[in-house]
Amino acid sequence: MNAINHVGEHDVLAAAKEDHESVIELTRDLVAIPSRGGVDSYDPVLNRLSIWLEQRHLAATVLKDKTGATVGLTCEVKGARPGPRWVLDACLDTAPFGDEHAWTHPPTSAVIDDGWLYGRGSADSKPAAAIFCHIAARLAITPSTLRGSLVLLFDVDEHTGGFGGAKRYFEGSEAPDDVAGVMIGYPGMDKLVIGGRGVHRAKLHVHGVASHSGGSKATPSAIEKAANLIKVLSTAELPDGTSPEFPLSGKLTATAIQGGEGYSVTPDLCTVNVDIRTTPTFNDEAASHLLEHLVAGVDDAWPGTRPTLIQVDTCWPAYSLDEKSRLRTALLDAAKTTGVHVEAKIAGPSNIGNYLAGLGIPATAGFGVTYTGLHGTDERARLDTIPTVQATYHKAVLQLMA
Image (cartoon, rainbow, N blue to C red):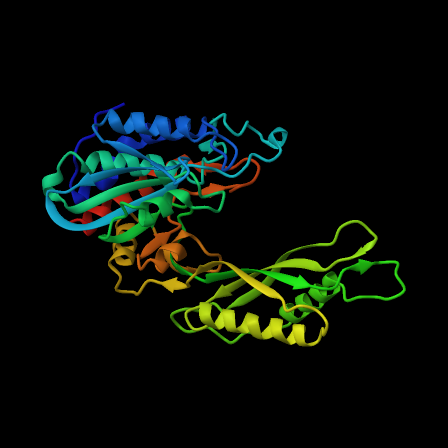
């Protein structure tokens, strides 16, 4: 591997091209190590990254949760002058393999075929981790030119839905209070996610009255009551939450139902999972009030049954970065200088940016390598897009830390 030299702001693309083979090599090493969320040990993939960083005199810190489980890794580059903290974030755990026999190349083969790197994590998001490591290595050579600090954060608890690495870093006992923004390296070069609908998720524990299903006297079935509730939920009119700054409206979906057992018992409990997508105007409080109102209406129509218990599971706010946001501006301007037209987009699905918004931390997501097959068979990334992605993030970081 070539030695990494410091480059100025105008040389970032040349530097990225110089690093290209090294980024590919590190990415292939990471893809070859299975790190499926909730399945594989994360120590091997984090050890590989730690060794790479330590060889370049960058100290890596493994993050553990309260149970002692490994949830992530961080590395910090400190500038010589005081300033805020910026974070480059990528996940190192992956989706499951699915049917391995359906893959053209095995999911940990890290095979390069016609310019594409195959393997689970080849798109989401091991290239981002490798790219971010190379940026940090270059910045670390001349800290005198930097203001503040840059932190690499690699989460290995994202595909489980736990986001343990992020939560440990941003909310743990040693959580920093000077984070000015987070750039999340999800794949895809066509858009930069600068906002997203929030989520209000709840389990509805719907009650009936248990009895023998063959008895002469029928009792209210929790499943039938839940079916009634689902119909009410699915036809509910949500307030229009759109605006020029946030063009998406709210959405309510029943996503799971569980109840009953066997054949001879009228069930007295049925649980319904509800996912509500929120907006700045149809916010978490409004979603909660709407759900309570709809549930109360169904409860009133089923006398003799206990009221439905609403168990709130997750609340992440909707967010959008202002056009004058330093984070948004830095990345979009950097993309222009590297010759990429990137659309700033409000996303329908939520992402870790919503979690960070709840902590008051600005975040972008979704600018990364060109890909296909995300989470599916033959996941792969276009290797010739790596230098452009690296140069864009590198230039943005230099601007933010100037």
